[in-house]
Image (cartoon, rainbow, N blue to C red; front, top):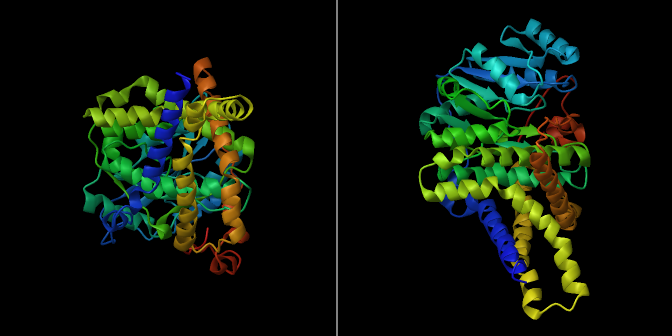
Length: 430
């Protein structure tokens, strides 16, 4: 009982803080007004867009050709391919032959991972701003113009744009996965940026090239190189602007299999634990920031613990003659958990409104029914991450991409009706 009480209180704290971060962008009208990008004006900056691609023959050409349709006048696209990946390299070289703005950078590092590829490309960047995109991204055609304006309006060193998973009907877990991204990029990252400590997203992130080089690029050994870079730049006092506009959000897909989702979350969680262990966050100014950083980076441990605690508490409370206080403590985290579920339902309605998705009543039902299984799935990934970190297993587990967000079934009516060969992107489309 003495051990269970503080454990339950810890779970209660996690549930309350998670809920608070989810709704941060909707606290006040002023907070809502901070979400979108500023209005664009005459572009003045130049961009180097990095697209690391490994075994991405199925989606790379679509991504790069769409990037080349940006309305910004000054940018280049650097496709990073491995020397052991002839299939993707062939696609990349064909794209470079089609358009002089595309260059191919060959990564010869061993073993290969995303940050090593990005570091290989960094010396070749000619633009004032380095942007990172994944090989399956569908990027809004006016994004760079808005990012250009955001850098200057906010006097920012870093701009983090929105990323949104779109294929919410692909599987039982895809809807919850899409909503996670919605709350993370539209609310939570705004909260962290405002408080001077931000784990950056893996793509649609833009950094001033001189600052990125001064910082030494990305950590080649970290499984969450985006988070690590964000923490490092935060400790250096970098100004980070976060913007989320649905029409400018980069569209992506959920992992196609449960195994892929668990591996992806394992990598992210283990990366957070690496950053926690290395301790760069200790250089953040202010005790409050350091406490927040430690709490956020330790979240995989808390998530793993909660996953292990749920079945134990349920069996103990239901099958054993548990004291009244014990039973009450068991249900203590229930209130914020139910409140979070209500917020998720409201969030799905807002997600539907922003992206014109045509969400149906059955989707709301799927959201509610999938709550517990999905949390157990995330807890499984957190446990796996903790075990791998303890064992020193730090191999990169790549996420497979199949282009599910490009299917006509996931597009808006306008996009689905577009003639063959045309590539549209409306607010409601993927």
